[in-house]
Image 1 (tube, rainbow, N blue to C red):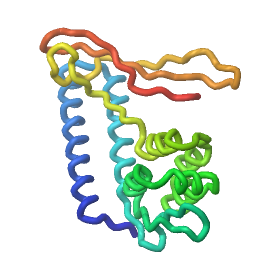
Image 2: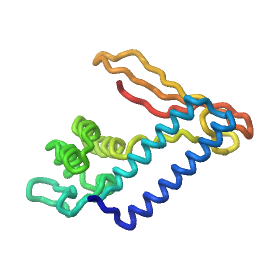
Image 3: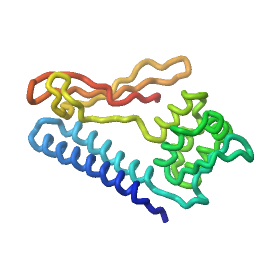
Image 4: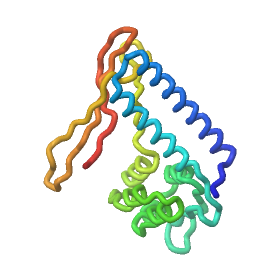
Amino acid sequence: MFDLNSESISDLGLKQLELARKRKKLEASYKAGKISQSTYEYIVKELTKAVVDLEVQTKEVSYERGFHFYEDAGKPTGQIALSLEDFARKVRDVSLASLEFHQERGDYANWIRDVFGEYSLAETVRNLKEKGEDLRKKILETIEGPQQNVVFLCPSCGKEVSPKRIWKMKGRPNRAGKTLQITLAHYQCLDCRKSFRQVLSKEIM
């Protein structure tokens, strides 16, 4: 069974309140006819996923099952991660020697898979080929997820605006057969009537 420490409970509670606030505003916009059903369903799906991801990231394991960082065999750094959220914090500070040592051995992926049962996430981490600070950046992006937000501030008046429409676009396959898929959103501010677009996410398919 996983426990949450007091700091994680505080962080989790604040983030859950923020997600609940966004969902309430979303439902009000949908009922008022300001956004389409497809847009509403897409955002609800993203918010639900965010809650699930948040719960996974803040689950804490015992000291013995935590991730113990080393710079080499027999050279512990003394840093230990007890949750995925804690892991991300440690990755920000750990030395590059330790970062690359564990990635080359597949230690991060094995821990994420065996301790948290996150097989897809583990495989994504295992396939990271970057080095140095680029590796640190990619691990953080993979663990924490892209900082996607469907509610943006109007560039003219600064008011929060929900999307009127969300759609996906695919580019041509590259030489490796991979295709870039972009999720876009169209916004129109209800206060100043400013229209603008935002890229919500980019995925390699």
